Image 1 (spheres, rainbow, N blue to C red):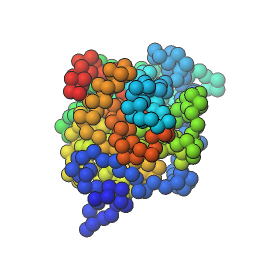
Image 2 (cartoon, helix red, strand yellow):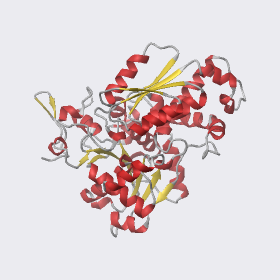
Image 3 (cartoon, helix red, strand yellow):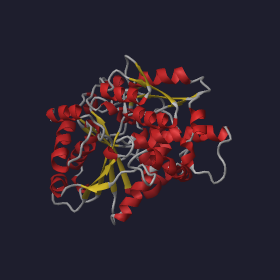
Image 4 (cartoon, rainbow, N blue to C red):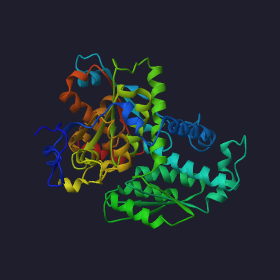
Length: 427
Protein backbone atom coordinates (compact mmCIF):
# COMPACT_ATOMS: atom_id res chain seq x y z
CA UNK A 1 0.00 0.00 0.00
CA UNK A 2 1.26 3.47 -0.87
CA UNK A 3 1.19 5.32 2.46
CA UNK A 4 1.52 8.61 0.61
CA UNK A 5 -1.61 8.14 -1.49
CA UNK A 6 -4.44 10.64 -0.93
CA UNK A 7 -6.90 9.42 1.73
CA UNK A 8 -10.11 7.82 0.50
CA UNK A 9 -13.30 6.80 2.22
CA UNK A 10 -14.58 3.29 1.73
CA UNK A 11 -18.17 2.58 2.79
CA UNK A 12 -18.11 5.70 4.92
CA UNK A 13 -15.11 4.49 6.96
CA UNK A 14 -11.92 6.55 7.16
CA UNK A 15 -8.97 5.08 5.30
CA UNK A 16 -5.84 4.88 7.46
CA UNK A 17 -2.57 3.57 5.94
CA UNK A 18 -2.19 -0.14 6.65
CA UNK A 19 1.26 0.16 8.29
CA UNK A 20 -0.19 2.72 10.70
CA UNK A 21 -3.03 0.36 11.59
CA UNK A 22 -0.45 -2.34 12.31
CA UNK A 23 1.47 0.03 14.63
CA UNK A 24 4.50 -0.06 12.33
CA UNK A 25 6.91 2.87 12.04
CA UNK A 26 5.73 5.02 9.15
CA UNK A 27 6.86 8.11 7.27
CA UNK A 28 3.62 9.66 6.01
CA UNK A 29 4.04 12.52 3.55
CA UNK A 30 0.99 14.70 3.95
CA UNK A 31 -1.00 14.69 0.67
CA UNK A 32 -3.07 17.66 1.88
CA UNK A 33 -0.07 19.99 2.25
CA UNK A 34 -0.76 23.24 0.39
CA UNK A 35 1.10 26.47 -0.18
CA UNK A 36 1.43 28.65 2.90
CA UNK A 37 -0.26 31.69 1.38
CA UNK A 38 -3.52 29.86 0.68
CA UNK A 39 -3.59 28.11 4.05
CA UNK A 40 -2.87 31.26 6.02
CA UNK A 41 -5.39 33.27 4.01
CA UNK A 42 -8.14 30.88 5.09
CA UNK A 43 -7.04 30.78 8.75
CA UNK A 44 -9.01 32.32 11.60
CA UNK A 45 -5.67 33.53 13.01
CA UNK A 46 -3.12 35.99 11.68
CA UNK A 47 0.35 37.33 12.31
CA UNK A 48 -1.27 40.15 14.28
CA UNK A 49 -2.58 37.55 16.74
CA UNK A 50 0.90 36.09 17.20
CA UNK A 51 2.37 39.57 17.67
CA UNK A 52 -0.26 40.35 20.31
CA UNK A 53 0.72 37.16 22.13
CA UNK A 54 4.36 38.19 22.01
CA UNK A 55 3.42 41.64 23.36
CA UNK A 56 1.62 40.00 26.31
CA UNK A 57 4.70 37.90 27.04
CA UNK A 58 6.74 41.12 27.13
CA UNK A 59 4.26 42.87 29.45
CA UNK A 60 4.62 40.03 31.92
CA UNK A 61 8.43 39.87 31.71
CA UNK A 62 8.96 41.87 34.94
CA UNK A 63 6.66 39.48 36.80
CA UNK A 64 8.33 36.33 35.45
CA UNK A 65 11.76 37.73 36.27
CA UNK A 66 10.61 38.38 39.84
CA UNK A 67 8.96 35.00 40.39
CA UNK A 68 11.22 32.44 38.73
CA UNK A 69 14.92 31.63 38.65
CA UNK A 70 16.38 31.41 35.18
CA UNK A 71 14.18 34.19 33.79
CA UNK A 72 16.24 37.22 34.75
CA UNK A 73 15.28 38.88 31.46
CA UNK A 74 11.67 37.80 31.85
CA UNK A 75 11.83 35.43 28.90
CA UNK A 76 10.76 31.81 28.93
CA UNK A 77 12.96 30.51 26.14
CA UNK A 78 15.59 27.87 25.49
CA UNK A 79 18.88 27.88 23.57
CA UNK A 80 19.31 26.67 20.01
CA UNK A 81 22.17 24.17 20.18
CA UNK A 82 24.21 22.49 17.43
CA UNK A 83 24.48 18.72 17.81
CA UNK A 84 27.87 17.18 18.40
CA UNK A 85 29.82 16.59 15.16
CA UNK A 86 29.83 12.81 15.57
CA UNK A 87 26.08 12.73 16.03
CA UNK A 88 25.60 15.04 13.07
CA UNK A 89 27.62 12.70 10.85
CA UNK A 90 25.63 9.74 12.11
CA UNK A 91 22.40 11.42 11.06
CA UNK A 92 23.46 13.23 7.88
CA UNK A 93 26.42 11.25 6.59
CA UNK A 94 28.50 13.40 4.26
CA UNK A 95 25.62 15.75 3.38
CA UNK A 96 26.33 19.45 4.01
CA UNK A 97 23.22 19.95 6.14
CA UNK A 98 23.10 20.73 9.85
CA UNK A 99 21.17 19.47 12.86
CA UNK A 100 20.23 21.78 15.71
CA UNK A 101 18.30 21.27 18.94
CA UNK A 102 15.67 23.71 20.22
CA UNK A 103 16.28 22.77 23.82
CA UNK A 104 12.88 23.10 25.47
CA UNK A 105 13.76 20.06 27.59
CA UNK A 106 15.62 22.64 29.67
CA UNK A 107 13.08 25.48 29.40
CA UNK A 108 12.97 27.79 32.45
CA UNK A 109 10.16 27.42 35.00
CA UNK A 110 8.87 23.98 33.93
CA UNK A 111 11.58 22.20 31.94
CA UNK A 112 9.15 21.48 29.11
CA UNK A 113 7.55 23.14 26.09
CA UNK A 114 4.17 23.28 27.83
CA UNK A 115 5.29 26.41 29.68
CA UNK A 116 4.91 28.29 26.41
CA UNK A 117 1.19 27.51 26.34
CA UNK A 118 0.18 26.73 29.92
CA UNK A 119 1.98 29.64 31.56
CA UNK A 120 0.76 31.97 28.83
CA UNK A 121 -2.90 31.05 29.25
CA UNK A 122 -2.77 31.56 33.02
CA UNK A 123 -1.21 34.99 32.44
CA UNK A 124 -3.91 35.85 29.91
CA UNK A 125 -6.64 34.89 32.40
CA UNK A 126 -4.96 36.86 35.19
CA UNK A 127 -4.75 39.93 32.96
CA UNK A 128 -8.44 39.64 32.05
CA UNK A 129 -9.44 39.42 35.71
CA UNK A 130 -7.21 42.31 36.72
CA UNK A 131 -8.59 44.53 33.97
CA UNK A 132 -12.20 43.72 34.92
CA UNK A 133 -11.40 44.51 38.57
CA UNK A 134 -9.92 47.91 37.68
CA UNK A 135 -6.42 47.00 38.89
CA UNK A 136 -4.64 47.94 35.67
CA UNK A 137 -3.55 51.50 35.06
CA UNK A 138 -1.31 53.16 32.45
CA UNK A 139 2.38 52.65 33.11
CA UNK A 140 1.84 49.86 35.66
CA UNK A 141 4.69 47.35 35.87
CA UNK A 142 3.27 43.85 35.66
CA UNK A 143 5.49 42.89 38.58
CA UNK A 144 2.49 44.22 40.54
CA UNK A 145 0.64 40.99 39.70
CA UNK A 146 2.57 39.43 42.60
CA UNK A 147 1.28 42.03 45.08
CA UNK A 148 -1.38 41.40 47.71
CA UNK A 149 -4.14 43.27 45.86
CA UNK A 150 -3.75 41.07 42.79
CA UNK A 151 -3.24 37.84 44.74
CA UNK A 152 -6.36 38.50 46.80
CA UNK A 153 -8.33 38.74 43.55
CA UNK A 154 -6.82 35.58 42.07
CA UNK A 155 -7.34 33.60 45.29
CA UNK A 156 -11.08 33.82 44.65
CA UNK A 157 -10.71 32.01 41.32
CA UNK A 158 -9.72 28.54 40.13
CA UNK A 159 -7.71 27.51 37.09
CA UNK A 160 -8.40 23.96 35.89
CA UNK A 161 -6.90 21.75 33.20
CA UNK A 162 -6.94 18.16 31.94
CA UNK A 163 -3.44 16.79 31.43
CA UNK A 164 -1.14 13.79 31.27
CA UNK A 165 1.32 15.82 33.35
CA UNK A 166 3.43 18.53 31.74
CA UNK A 167 0.65 20.93 30.77
CA UNK A 168 -0.87 20.47 34.22
CA UNK A 169 2.49 21.28 35.81
CA UNK A 170 2.89 24.41 33.68
CA UNK A 171 -0.60 25.63 34.57
CA UNK A 172 -0.05 24.64 38.19
CA UNK A 173 3.29 26.40 38.61
CA UNK A 174 2.01 29.68 37.20
CA UNK A 175 -1.41 29.46 38.80
CA UNK A 176 -0.12 28.77 42.28
CA UNK A 177 2.60 31.44 41.95
CA UNK A 178 -0.17 34.02 41.45
CA UNK A 179 -2.39 32.64 44.21
CA UNK A 180 -5.04 30.85 42.12
CA UNK A 181 -6.60 27.61 43.27
CA UNK A 182 -5.52 24.98 40.74
CA UNK A 183 -7.28 21.74 39.81
CA UNK A 184 -5.66 19.23 37.44
CA UNK A 185 -7.61 16.31 36.00
CA UNK A 186 -5.28 13.49 35.03
CA UNK A 187 -5.57 10.23 33.13
CA UNK A 188 -4.68 6.79 34.42
CA UNK A 189 -1.49 6.73 32.32
CA UNK A 190 -0.07 9.92 33.83
CA UNK A 191 3.11 9.33 35.78
CA UNK A 192 2.82 9.11 39.56
CA UNK A 193 5.71 11.53 40.05
CA UNK A 194 3.97 14.12 37.90
CA UNK A 195 0.88 13.85 40.09
CA UNK A 196 2.98 14.16 43.22
CA UNK A 197 4.81 17.31 42.13
CA UNK A 198 1.46 18.95 41.43
CA UNK A 199 0.24 18.11 44.92
CA UNK A 200 3.47 19.57 46.33
CA UNK A 201 2.64 22.83 44.53
CA UNK A 202 -0.70 22.91 46.32
CA UNK A 203 -2.77 21.88 43.30
CA UNK A 204 -5.73 19.53 43.63
CA UNK A 205 -5.23 16.43 41.48
CA UNK A 206 -8.32 14.58 40.28
CA UNK A 207 -7.56 11.15 38.84
CA UNK A 208 -9.72 9.47 36.19
CA UNK A 209 -9.76 5.78 35.22
CA UNK A 210 -9.95 6.58 31.50
CA UNK A 211 -7.39 8.03 29.13
CA UNK A 212 -6.31 11.62 28.55
CA UNK A 213 -9.34 12.46 26.41
CA UNK A 214 -11.76 11.33 29.11
CA UNK A 215 -9.90 13.35 31.75
CA UNK A 216 -10.16 16.48 29.60
CA UNK A 217 -13.85 15.87 28.92
CA UNK A 218 -14.58 15.41 32.63
CA UNK A 219 -12.74 18.60 33.56
CA UNK A 220 -14.45 20.56 30.80
CA UNK A 221 -17.88 19.47 32.02
CA UNK A 222 -17.06 20.20 35.66
CA UNK A 223 -16.05 23.79 34.93
CA UNK A 224 -18.27 24.84 32.04
CA UNK A 225 -20.67 26.86 34.21
CA UNK A 226 -18.19 28.21 36.78
CA UNK A 227 -18.01 32.02 36.67
CA UNK A 228 -15.20 31.92 39.24
CA UNK A 229 -13.02 29.54 37.27
CA UNK A 230 -11.18 29.15 33.97
CA UNK A 231 -10.69 25.84 32.17
CA UNK A 232 -7.53 25.52 30.07
CA UNK A 233 -8.82 23.40 27.20
CA UNK A 234 -5.86 21.63 25.63
CA UNK A 235 -8.05 20.49 22.72
CA UNK A 236 -9.65 23.82 21.82
CA UNK A 237 -7.80 26.76 23.38
CA UNK A 238 -6.87 29.75 21.26
CA UNK A 239 -4.67 31.20 24.01
CA UNK A 240 -2.66 28.00 24.28
CA UNK A 241 -2.24 27.89 20.51
CA UNK A 242 -1.04 31.50 20.28
CA UNK A 243 1.24 31.16 23.29
CA UNK A 244 3.03 28.35 21.47
CA UNK A 245 3.00 30.28 18.19
CA UNK A 246 5.04 33.10 19.73
CA UNK A 247 7.93 30.64 20.17
CA UNK A 248 8.54 30.97 16.43
CA UNK A 249 9.79 34.50 16.99
CA UNK A 250 12.42 33.20 19.42
CA UNK A 251 13.60 30.59 16.93
CA UNK A 252 13.68 33.16 14.11
CA UNK A 253 15.96 35.38 16.19
CA UNK A 254 18.26 32.48 17.09
CA UNK A 255 18.55 31.26 13.50
CA UNK A 256 19.50 34.77 12.40
CA UNK A 257 22.09 35.05 15.17
CA UNK A 258 23.58 31.72 14.03
CA UNK A 259 23.74 32.94 10.43
CA UNK A 260 21.28 30.30 9.20
CA UNK A 261 19.32 31.30 6.12
CA UNK A 262 15.76 30.04 5.71
CA UNK A 263 14.33 30.46 2.22
CA UNK A 264 13.32 28.45 -0.82
CA UNK A 265 16.92 27.43 -1.44
CA UNK A 266 17.56 26.71 2.25
CA UNK A 267 14.54 24.85 3.69
CA UNK A 268 14.10 24.33 7.41
CA UNK A 269 12.81 20.97 8.65
CA UNK A 270 11.46 21.12 12.21
CA UNK A 271 10.68 17.90 14.12
CA UNK A 272 7.88 18.41 16.64
CA UNK A 273 6.61 15.74 19.08
CA UNK A 274 2.82 15.69 18.93
CA UNK A 275 0.28 14.74 21.58
CA UNK A 276 -3.06 16.47 21.17
CA UNK A 277 -1.34 18.93 18.87
CA UNK A 278 -1.42 22.33 20.57
CA UNK A 279 2.32 22.88 20.96
CA UNK A 280 3.46 21.57 17.55
CA UNK A 281 0.46 23.18 15.90
CA UNK A 282 1.13 26.60 17.38
CA UNK A 283 4.84 26.41 16.54
CA UNK A 284 4.01 25.32 12.99
CA UNK A 285 1.62 28.22 12.53
CA UNK A 286 4.11 30.76 13.88
CA UNK A 287 7.02 29.48 11.81
CA UNK A 288 4.91 29.45 8.65
CA UNK A 289 3.90 33.06 9.24
CA UNK A 290 7.59 33.95 9.38
CA UNK A 291 9.13 31.65 6.76
CA UNK A 292 6.27 30.58 4.48
CA UNK A 293 6.85 27.44 2.44
CA UNK A 294 10.53 27.35 3.39
CA UNK A 295 9.63 25.74 6.73
CA UNK A 296 8.75 22.03 6.61
CA UNK A 297 7.10 20.89 9.87
CA UNK A 298 7.39 17.18 10.64
CA UNK A 299 5.11 15.95 13.42
CA UNK A 300 6.30 12.99 15.49
CA UNK A 301 3.98 10.47 17.14
CA UNK A 302 4.22 7.05 18.82
CA UNK A 303 3.18 4.08 16.68
CA UNK A 304 0.44 3.29 19.21
CA UNK A 305 -0.95 6.83 19.36
CA UNK A 306 -0.59 8.64 16.00
CA UNK A 307 -3.67 10.77 16.59
CA UNK A 308 -2.75 13.63 14.25
CA UNK A 309 -1.83 11.29 11.39
CA UNK A 310 -5.08 9.38 11.86
CA UNK A 311 -7.07 12.62 11.92
CA UNK A 312 -5.44 14.11 8.83
CA UNK A 313 -5.67 10.88 6.86
CA UNK A 314 -9.36 10.56 7.75
CA UNK A 315 -10.45 14.11 6.90
CA UNK A 316 -11.52 17.00 9.09
CA UNK A 317 -15.29 16.67 9.22
CA UNK A 318 -15.28 14.89 12.59
CA UNK A 319 -12.92 13.81 15.35
CA UNK A 320 -11.35 10.40 14.69
CA UNK A 321 -9.49 8.45 17.39
CA UNK A 322 -6.65 5.97 17.14
CA UNK A 323 -8.97 3.37 18.64
CA UNK A 324 -10.97 3.49 15.42
CA UNK A 325 -7.77 2.56 13.59
CA UNK A 326 -7.34 -0.50 15.81
CA UNK A 327 -4.57 1.00 17.95
CA UNK A 328 -4.37 0.92 21.74
CA UNK A 329 -2.85 4.33 22.66
CA UNK A 330 -0.34 2.62 24.97
CA UNK A 331 3.13 4.15 24.88
CA UNK A 332 5.97 4.98 27.23
CA UNK A 333 5.82 8.51 25.81
CA UNK A 334 3.11 9.55 28.26
CA UNK A 335 3.03 13.12 27.02
CA UNK A 336 2.13 11.82 23.56
CA UNK A 337 -0.41 9.21 24.70
CA UNK A 338 -3.42 10.92 23.14
CA UNK A 339 -6.16 9.12 21.25
CA UNK A 340 -7.74 12.08 19.43
CA UNK A 341 -6.04 15.15 18.00
CA UNK A 342 -7.29 18.68 18.46
CA UNK A 343 -9.63 19.51 15.60
CA UNK A 344 -8.79 23.18 16.09
CA UNK A 345 -5.14 22.41 15.37
CA UNK A 346 -5.81 19.89 12.59
CA UNK A 347 -8.07 22.33 10.76
CA UNK A 348 -5.71 25.28 11.26
CA UNK A 349 -2.35 23.73 10.32
CA UNK A 350 -3.23 20.42 8.65
CA UNK A 351 -2.40 21.92 5.27
CA UNK A 352 1.01 23.13 6.51
CA UNK A 353 2.38 19.86 7.91
CA UNK A 354 4.95 18.30 5.59
CA UNK A 355 4.95 14.83 7.13
CA UNK A 356 4.08 12.77 10.17
CA UNK A 357 6.58 10.17 11.36
CA UNK A 358 5.54 7.45 13.79
CA UNK A 359 8.18 5.83 15.99
CA UNK A 360 8.22 2.79 18.32
CA UNK A 361 8.97 3.10 22.01
CA UNK A 362 12.23 1.19 21.57
CA UNK A 363 13.55 4.04 19.41
CA UNK A 364 12.71 6.59 22.10
CA UNK A 365 14.78 4.81 24.72
CA UNK A 366 17.65 4.17 22.33
CA UNK A 367 17.89 7.83 21.40
CA UNK A 368 17.41 8.94 25.00
CA UNK A 369 20.54 6.96 25.88
CA UNK A 370 22.51 8.14 22.84
CA UNK A 371 21.74 11.78 23.59
CA UNK A 372 22.64 11.45 27.25
CA UNK A 373 25.91 9.67 26.54
CA UNK A 374 26.91 11.76 23.55
CA UNK A 375 25.51 15.21 24.33
CA UNK A 376 24.59 15.26 28.03
CA UNK A 377 20.95 15.94 27.19
CA UNK A 378 18.55 14.72 29.86
CA UNK A 379 15.28 13.95 28.08
CA UNK A 380 11.95 12.34 28.72
CA UNK A 381 11.24 9.48 26.29
CA UNK A 382 8.71 11.62 24.40
CA UNK A 383 11.29 14.40 24.02
CA UNK A 384 13.72 11.99 22.31
CA UNK A 385 11.12 11.18 19.67
CA UNK A 386 12.25 13.98 17.36
CA UNK A 387 15.65 12.35 16.88
CA UNK A 388 14.04 8.97 16.27
CA UNK A 389 11.86 10.62 13.62
CA UNK A 390 14.73 12.53 12.01
CA UNK A 391 16.65 9.31 11.51
CA UNK A 392 13.68 7.60 9.87
CA UNK A 393 12.72 10.64 7.81
CA UNK A 394 16.19 10.98 6.29
CA UNK A 395 16.23 7.27 5.48
CA UNK A 396 12.98 7.83 3.57
CA UNK A 397 14.05 11.13 1.99
CA UNK A 398 17.88 11.22 1.82
CA UNK A 399 17.77 14.12 -0.64
CA UNK A 400 16.84 16.56 2.16
CA UNK A 401 19.86 15.76 4.31
CA UNK A 402 21.56 18.93 3.03
CA UNK A 403 18.85 21.12 4.60
CA UNK A 404 18.80 22.61 8.11
CA UNK A 405 17.08 20.33 10.62
CA UNK A 406 15.84 21.50 14.04
CA UNK A 407 14.74 18.90 16.58
CA UNK A 408 12.46 20.37 19.26
CA UNK A 409 13.16 18.56 22.54
CA UNK A 410 10.07 19.06 24.65
CA UNK A 411 10.76 17.93 28.22
CA UNK A 412 13.11 16.28 30.65
CA UNK A 413 14.89 18.69 32.99
CA UNK A 414 12.60 17.87 35.92
CA UNK A 415 12.63 14.11 35.37
CA UNK A 416 13.43 12.46 38.75
CA UNK A 417 16.72 10.60 38.92
CA UNK A 418 15.05 7.22 39.46
CA UNK A 419 12.76 7.75 36.44
CA UNK A 420 15.67 8.78 34.24
CA UNK A 421 17.78 5.81 35.35
CA UNK A 422 14.90 3.45 34.59
CA UNK A 423 14.49 4.97 31.13
CA UNK A 424 18.21 4.56 30.41
CA UNK A 425 18.02 0.96 31.53
CA UNK A 426 15.33 0.25 28.93
CA UNK A 427 17.55 1.34 26.04
